[in-house]
Amino acid sequence: MSSDPERDPGDRPGDERPVTGTYPTVPDPDVVAQPTPARDRRTGDAALRRAAERRLAAVVEGMSEAFLSLDANWRVTYANRAACDLNGTTRAALVGRDHWAQWPETAGGEVEREYRRVATERVPARFDHYYPRAQTWHAIQVYPAEGGGLAVFFRDITVERASAAERERLLLDSERARADAEAARAEAESANRSKAHFLATMSHELRTPLNAIGGYAELMEMGIRGPVSDAQRHDLARIQASQRHLLGLINEVLDYAKLETGAVRYDITTVAVCDALAAAEALVEPQARAKALTLTVRACTPEVAVRADPEKLRQILVNLLSNAVKFTDAGGCIDLACAHDAERVRLTVRDTGIGIPADKLDAVFEPFVQVRTDLTRATDGTGLGLAISRDLARGMGGDLVVESTLGAGSAFTLTLRTDDV
Ligand code: ADP
Image (tube, rainbow, N blue to C red; front, side, top):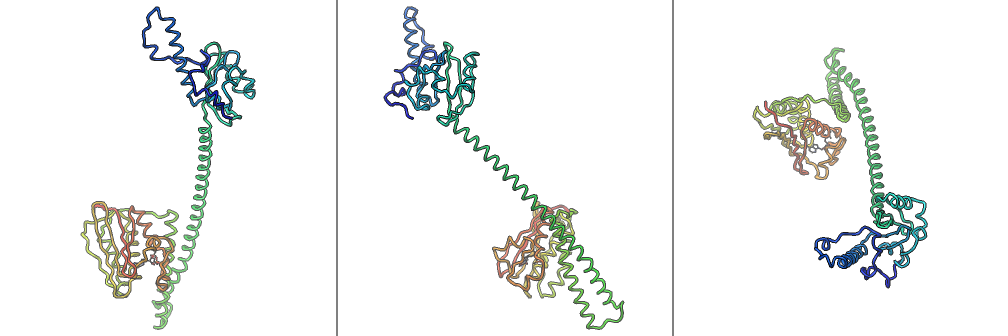
């Protein structure tokens, strides 16, 4: 397939001149610039012309593009080295050959059509063509040349076309992957909606009879149904405590289901932080006292305010303080402090409790996750409180984060946007 090295035209480009005028001539700037005395003009012109031809031949020989020139009778008058290489032959074998005899497969197709059009209309043409012998794609440029012939350039675009095809394939793949991901996401969303709908319905259905249990227990305790003995009163108190506990759990599930379906409405307003802290403290203080914990709420100046839904802010703070009570042993301390700047208010609930292992710090915000280092404590709750609290915090433009040291205590910080009272 390689050309004969003996006859390789690239070795001596100036010696094997292409037939004059079978391809567009290239003006030589040096020649054009020099004035020639009139008496020497004819000999000078011929010498300069030969020099220009040699220079042009050298350029054409050195091109990476294959080049052919054809005369008006479709004979090959010149083929550069790249053209010889492309055809796996020598220039001697090509020059003088009839184009259609040399490349019979090109007759009757696009190549013939375009060549003939250029030959007749004398306007250049460009088209892409696959050359089966070399298994290569070429961008073919055809120019009318002097004497009714053609000058033809073949630029190898196999790689470009392959990469274009590859690009197309990748594009299709990525579009398919995107469609798959979108379908999976839609499916997951739909499954999530069904789950949330189920939870919301279930919670609702459970709350009604639970409220009835609480209501009837209260009526009995009040003696409305007749006298109540001390033992019965004791049992009724247990029934009520269990009812409240169960109702609390169900309310959490319902809250979470609502957050999941996006059914939560936020009534954002200006909330004075000291009021929010006092309200939360009042609700948790009895639990802390019952467990002999020291609950300290650090004073904060009355003008400190946040943009928040007051009900949801209270819910978050109560959840954080209740957890601190739940996970701190008797005699421990719980501290609620406030720090603020022009943009953010940070409310930190710190305890001296059991702490959270470092590898569970992210997980505690996931729904239904409970750190089971202490099973008796872990059974008390749903594992939804922190997931709900963080969603609520984010829903108000804030966030909830934790720092903790196992065995030493935890600090949950709620961040909200600062506001002016
Ligand atoms: P629940 O309290 O109902 O279990 P939460 O979502 O409020 O659910 O908390 C998830 C888990 O995070 C808890 O079960 C507990 O393991 C851990 N946790 C939360 N607060 C604390 C805390 N202050 N100290 C130690 N562990 C905590």
